[in-house]
Length: 189
Image (cartoon, rainbow, N blue to C red; front, top):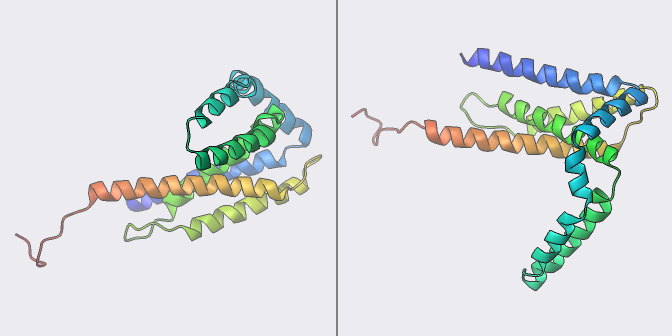
C-alpha cells in the first residue's frame, strides 16, 4: 500500500512539474493572455484590494496596538501599500501563480520524501523544489519575450517552503493520531 501511495505522489509531482514547465515554455503574449484571463476571474478580489478599504481597517487596528507593535505594523502596512497593493493587478496575478504552483509542489514533495520510519525530511524536498525553480526560470530564457528572474525563484521557493511546512505539520498531526502506545517494559500486557 505504501508503494502505491508513493507512486501516486510521484505521479502528482510529475504532473505539477509538467504544468509549471509547460507554462514557462509559453511565449510572452500567450502567457500574458492567460494572466489576463485569471485577472478577469479575480477582478472582484483585486478591486477590493485596491479600494483602500483594507488600509483604512488596518490603520484603525494599528491605533489600538502597543506603540512598538504599532510602529512595526505601520511599517508593514507601508510596505504592503508600496509593493503589493499599488502594483498592477497582472503583476500580482503572475507572482501569485508562481507562489501557488510551488506551494503545491512543496506540499507534494514534502509528502513524497517521508522517511521509512515516518519521520519527515526538510532539506531534500526543498532542494528538489529549488532545482525545479531554477529549471523553470532557465526554460523562460528560451521562451519568446520571456526572461529569467531571481525574484521569481525567491517567490517560488517561498511557496515551496510554505507547502512543505504545511505537509510537515499535517504529517506530524497524523503521526500524533496514529501513534501506537508501546508497552511499559517491552512486554505485551
